[in-house]
Amino acid sequence: MKRQIERMERELKEKENVIQFMNTEQKIKDTDFSKSMHVAKEKLGKLEESVNTLKAKNKDLEEENDYVRNLIQDNNLLELYDETSNQFTADTIECVMNLQNNNISASKIGEVIRTVCSLCKRQPNRVPSATTVNRISDMKLSIATKQVEDLSKKSNLTLYSDETSKFGKSFEVFAVTDEDKNSYLLGLREMNCKSSETVLETFKDILQDFNDLCDGNDVGFKVLTAIKNTMSDRASTEKKFQNLLENYRTTILTKIIDGWPMLTEEERAASSRMNNFFCSCIFLVNFATVCGEGLKNLNRYI
DNA sequence: GGACGAACGAGGGGCTCTCA
DNA sequence: TGAGAGCCCCTCGTTCGTCC
Image (cartoon, rainbow, N blue to C red; front, side, top):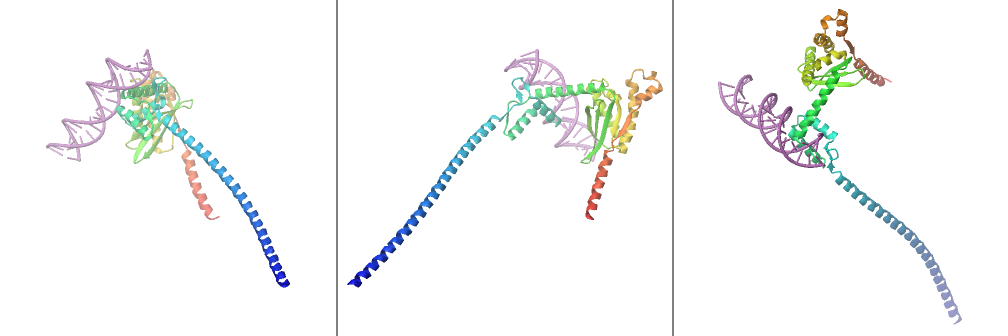
């Protein structure tokens, strides 16, 4: 009986130990769970904060989107006509002039502007009629006439000329500068060939156009007589053209200058003399090109 | 009065078609 | 292939009306 009681006490003791161990384990698990819960709550808080930030950002972007949409709708109207001054804007007039230079009919220019505007999703507030376009053309002619007349009153002009070939065609451009370094483009013309005689004929055509433009006041010839210097590249045709130009200019001088027969030989020579300058920039360009190739080859052996 | 639009006609240049 | 006719389009000029 006593042994049986001792055995039962041992078993009870063991069970108590087991229960104590399990309690300890449970406490540990409860502590870990509590920690996990705390971490999870912190993460949830951060995620909620992040969601709120994204919601705020989304709201800002939606407002910005609405603002840009309204801005685009407001800018849909293209102001070509100034309602305040009751006239077309300077940009519009320049646009009309450029379209006219491309042989767009006066009656079609308004429709062309409208069509191009629709391509850009814009709506012009007004487009010029054919009459207005023709009036702008008159303005352009008046400005050109005034500029040529002003040019004819200047002296000591320098003529710049150069020839270029594009798409199998030859073109010659003429420009002058005055003593104040102001530049004036006289013309860019296509030529049948690039001989010096053709260049001179082309220049004569431009001068005659000036004469016609200014109602026969010999403005073109006056511009010619005001040219005292020439500048061009060293092309042989340019050199010969300058000689031909000097001779032609002398014949014009006899018609333009009053009392030419009364002048002395020295005075005539002084009036006829022209200073010919040649640009050597092409030499420097060629020199740079050759040097560049030479340096490239040198690099291969270093 | 200034700026613009509509309408018209004259003249010129370019393109197409026909014919020899 | 070249010349000529016809057509179309554009430029230029003019007049008159409208709007601000």
